[in-house]
Image (cartoon, rainbow, N blue to C red; front, side, top):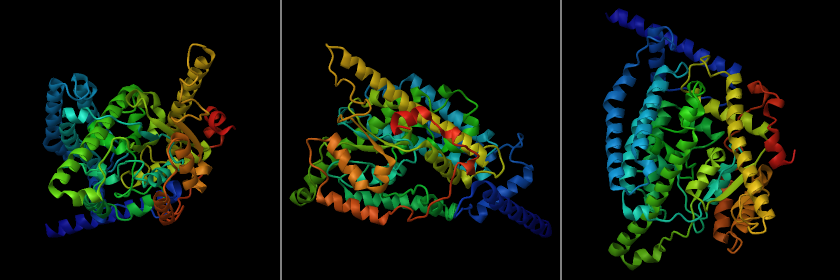
Length: 527
C-alpha cells in the first residue's frame, strides 16, 4: 500500500510538472504576462490530482463534491437567513421595497442558484478556482445580512445623500489615480477604502476615525495574506495593472458584492463564456439589477453617514473635550466620492437613485483602452483557469473586451445624446429653462465635467483643480494641505513604478477597425 501510494503521489507530481509546463507555455504563446503568478504547490497538486482522476475538467460526469457541500452547509443556510430578514424588512416597511420585497427575494435566490450552476458547469475554471469563487457567495450573503440589519433603522433611512460625485469613466482611462488622489482631500470628500468593503462587519468605521480605519486595514491585510499564500506573487503581478490596496480608495463595485448574494465583477470575467449564452436581461448586467445595486449602494452610504454621527456623539459623551479638540463634528454636507467604470453603462439608473449626482468622465481612445482592459482580464483570471480551455485564448479575450467596451461606450454615448437632445429641446422652448439638462456635453455646468486621458495622465493635480473650479465654482481650490497630500501620493505611485504590462491590439488579434468606436470618438475625442 505504501508503495502504491508513493507511485500515485509521484505520478500526480509528474502531472503537476506537465500542467506547470503547459501553463507557462500558454503564457508565452497567448497571454504574455510579465511576473506571471501560479497558485501555491498544494493548490496545483489538488488540481492535477483532480484532472488525472477525471481525465478532463470538461467531463460532464464530474460531480464537484466540495461545491455541493459548500452549497448545503454554508451558502444555503446563509441565503435562508438573508431571505428571512428580507421578509421582516418588507413587513416593517423601513428600507426601500426594491431591496426586500417578494421580487427582491426571488431575484436574490435566483442569482445565487445561477451562480452555483454557472460555476458547476464551467469548462474554464480549475477545481480549486471553482471552490474559491463559490465560497465568495457565503461571504457575500453573510455581509448582506449584517448590512441589511444596520439599514433597518428609521434614522438610517432618514439620512440625506448630498450631491455624491461619481467618476463614471470608461475603464483604463486614469480614473483610479484620479479617484485615489482626490480622496486624500478629506475636508472636501468622504470615500471608502478597500478595507471597508472587504471586512465591513461587525461594525462600520466612521470616516473621521483614523485609528479605527487603521485597525480595519489590519483585518483586511490578514485576508490578503491568505490570498498571497494561495497565489504567491499575484499581488505584485496585479500591481502592474491595478493594485488592490486595503488602505486606499477603491471602486464602489465592492459594495455590490454584499448586495447581490455573490461577487459582482469576478463572474463577469471568470464565467463570461457562460454569461454570453444568456440574454442580457437575465444576468447581473440588466437594467433592473442596476436599479437594485444603486438602491443598495444608497443604503450603504446612509449607514455610514448615520455611523459617523452616532459614533461621534457616543465618543463625545465618554471622552469629552479632548475628543472634540481632535475631531470636528461630522456633517452630511461633505459629499461622497465614488468610482466604478460600470457606471457608464447605467447612467440613467444611477441618476434615478441619485438625481443630484455630479459626474466626472475621462476620455481615452478605445484603441488604447481595449488591449489594456483585455490584459487586466487575462491577469486577473490566469491563476484560476485551465490554459487552453474555452475563453482563455488571447483572441477570445480580445473579442470579449471589445464587447465589454461596446457596452460601456454605447451607454455613455446614448446617455449624452439623450441629455443633449433634452437640452436643445428646452433651449428652443421659450417656456422652459435652457439649463434643464445639466448633464449635456460639452458642459460648463456644475453637474458634469469631461476630461481627456492626457490631462489626467500628465497632470493629476491640475485635473483636480479643474474639477473643483467647474463643479464647485463658489468654493475654494484644493487647500495647501490637500495639495501636499496629492503630491506625496503621486510621488509614491509614479506611473509604471510597479511595472507596466506589454499589450497591443495585435496581441489580442484585433485590428484598428475592430476598435474604431466611431460614435464615441466623434462625440468625445473629435476624431
